Amino acid sequence: MNFYRAFGLVFRSDIPLGSLAANRIAAQQPDVDIRRGTPARPDPGVAVDDMRVEINADSLRLSVPECGWFDVTGGARIIYEARAGIPAEHMPPYLLGTALGALLHQRALLPLHCNAIVHDGRAYLFCGDSGAGKSTLAAVFEARGYPLLTDDLCAIAADAEGRFSATPGIPRLKLWIESLTALGREGAEVTRIPWYEDKFEVAMSRAAEDRRYPVAAIYHLRQADEDAPPGIHRLQGLEAANAVTANIYRRRIADLLGRAPGYLAESMALIRSVPLFRFNRRWGLQNVIEDAALAEAHLLGVKMTQ
Image (tube, rainbow, N blue to C red; front, side):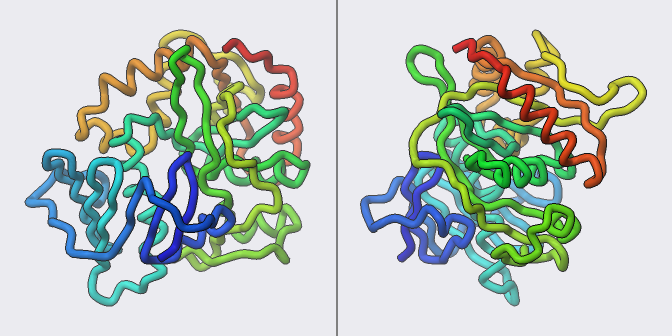
């Protein structure tokens, strides 16, 4: 068995989860058990992108055409089965992606599609669609000495006083080969991501310590254009709430789980206590260093409102 710690939880898995290797810990009673079995199939289930999803009591059944089947139960267990001919290394990306996102929703956490870095004991989140440059920006920050808190998926929660915080998640970045080359990271320790010829997981040399970090600010990355020139500006009210809900990880699955009232309330509480900014940036690797410098100067001036 393999034991890991991430998102404030202890995971026990019968399959190695290489993305969590940096967080490997000694065996102890797990919060989440991941093991191979025979998950119940969605029958017929609801279409979510190219997947089929079915909710049955406290269980979420998931069918992924290019991978296999998953049964996520009670925020504490993931049973998986690969389709015939699917290599074992194709399972972890889904176990630590869609299946994990569903499990975090079952635990009533607020998982966001974002990266996060740490500065001065506080977490700064960078949200946005795939291709918005989250991982590339995070790689620049890491090279400048900022520990990486998590990549792609960040689970946040509020305490009894309404203060939001995040814990370390996945301590590796997913980067295209052109990003590795542009950042001078060709010699870094990398693992090719299944289904991609030129996209890799990169181990980070600076990972955040295992504790909770108050969320200091959230940046929503968007492409700059004539109507949205490059720069960073504060979002308020409905615009801020929409930016949060648009970046909820696997929001459609959360809806099927009945989490909509919860995540809407949490989103409103979040924008009342944490500043949220729109970061209009220019697409292209030639701009990433300058954009990172702009973001760095801005976050260093952010004052916590919690």
